[in-house]
Image (cartoon, rainbow, N blue to C red; front, side):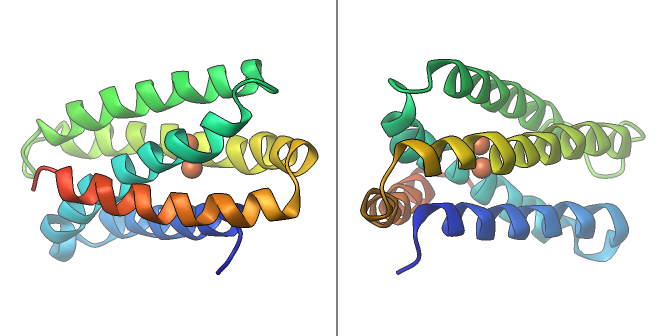
Length: 145
Ligand SMILES: [Fe+2]
Ligand SMILES: [Fe+2]
């Protein structure tokens, strides 16, 4: 089993790929939207329940900022989902959402990852990966499809 930061980076790469596909390939947009709706909230939920919960006390500022970004992403995702695929606003709102998510992932990989490596032991990071997988499964069960 990989440690949690590797699992998070894998999710980030997968979701970044989804956004690239959404932008460039109109044929697969329906199905990619369904995948995004499941993967993005599930990813954020699992982070909050594991890594963020563990780091909150030692890094209140970094985690507070990240939680704020999760809220902004959730709000923008809700806006995006409310727009029909063929509406003119779809592409600009996709671009806004993509920008928010990619900036958040980059900040997480730079700032939160280095704080995690500083404050947590290797065994903590491995232990957290188990919870991360379980929380994602739990979130998928409640995802509205
Ligand atoms: Fe996050
Ligand atoms: Fe993340």
